Image (cartoon, rainbow, N blue to C red; front, top):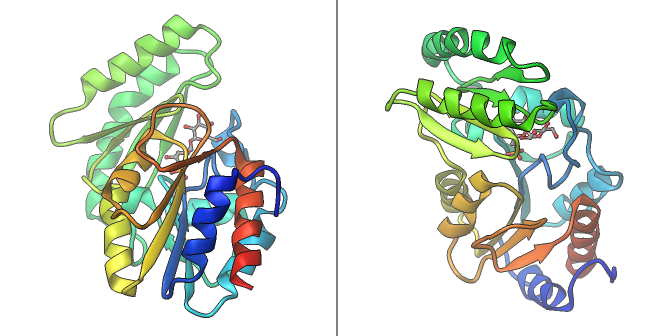
Length: 248
Ligand SMILES: O=P(O)(O)OC[C@H]1O[C@H](O[C@H]2O[C@H](CO)[C@@H](O)[C@H](O)[C@H]2O)[C@H](O)[C@@H](O)[C@@H]1O
């Protein structure tokens, strides 16, 4: 067993490993990949691809990647491939790419936000399948970063869903959330138990939604509804390797 995994968590993983069918689901940014300034450069922590493959190789175990990113973007950026379920856009992309119906609203929103973002050096606009994200991680002037996020928040009309995250405010044209997505996946697969790993505010929806008896793990600092915590993506690799050992 790896020392990066707290003893209480190893005990919980051992209990989980005995249950089938089992869903092992994870967020991507900040969990399987360290956070970086450029969203298109967020590659997996070394060992992630191998550890996920080991877990997914077991009978009755399904691995799901549940991200705020669009599925196509997630697959490209991560380079991950395997027999995984892919749930993107915070759960709005569940069974495949979204239809074009939402694109007009999203594009109008992007047009509205673009001049605000262009005025702040280092800010970045990310247009996704069902949302537009205003990123401020690389804005050196922290007061300007906070003001931009407040301006973007003001632009949002009540039909949009606000998704604040790490150095980002995302405005979504659907009301999908990771909690509903996890419950749907859980139900569809008819699992006996599920595990979910996440690091950000949008992951709290999943931590709160999953029934007791499931395993929830917060990655990093901050308040959480999760039952367990590990420090960073390197510790997530250790966790997944520990689970794979227990499943063997
Ligand atoms: O649900 P996730 O898989 O965690 O995706 C959440 C958002 O992740 C990305 O933004 C975050 O990671 C970036 C790369 O490390 C970082 O620059 C940014 O500050 C973070 O907020 C992604 O760009 C978003 O689309 C996702 O919604």
